[in-house]
Length: 371
Image 1 (cartoon, helix red, strand yellow):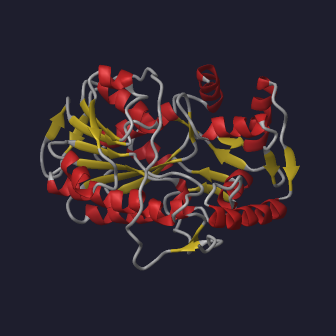
Image 2 (image 1 turned 30 degrees about the vertical axis):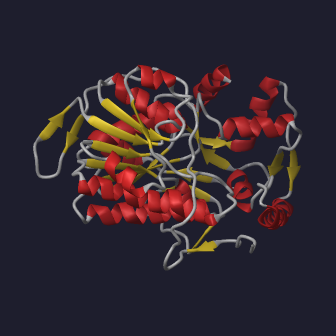
Image 3 (image 1 turned 60 degrees about the horizontal axis):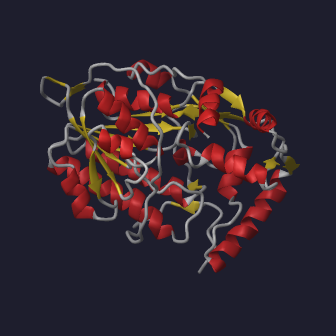
């Protein structure tokens, strides 16, 4: 097995093999209610309640979104594989759709009779045993969702992407949606999400109303990735500060992302467009992490020079390619923690009416209370 390349070029014909997509649990959170309204192409406005499918509805973001939709009175289907962590959703009336993203015909069928589809499910990771697993979930799975929407005349598709699609491993400051894709991608995840964006944009030309959102670094109650993994590394004495520690990042509380998704479902000027979604706060990452660790009585991370961290990550990736075991570090994860990554959300504020309601500090407090 060859080691993963430093940066990944866009293939001419991406493979369509493999298995798996990310799912996880979630915890309830109150959201404000408002009437839903979707403008269907070439038709009058359609009032709620609507029939809505949330792929990845058993995962972190998807389960929060499903709760908000149920609170608005919509009929909600949640597509996923493991429903053990979402009993509250099923009790509230969500309909389980036990389908894997790799089951193309079943995904297409799940879109029948839906007014809106939120495509939240993805394989989101810094590393996987097979690159094909990313293509299966993030490319072939997205293709199936789009085909289902077109075949069953779904009025709007909202696709959850990531700022990773424009990240090239360097500092990014106040980037907006005009930023070009990099020539080479920093991870297979980023590449396959970019291909997913291509597919969604192509579907717009086939008559499907689509909106792409790129939320950055989602955290909140039910999070199993961002804060929990940082805290676990700190408890085990493995957390290191990569680089000078002065990099700024945008974080996004999960409730704010849900607000943006609900707005994207309704906004008349949103179809055909892509939007960055963040908390609108450029946060100094490592001082924030140190403050959090101090509150929890955990050891602060020791600094590690960025070139050395990247070299170690490269060696760990090579070893992982041979052993099949996940590396402690990847160059992508090092770059994400070392580089400035801030984004301009003025387009979302203008077209969607998006305003972050929960600050980073308040969001961290809520998350720690749940942990």
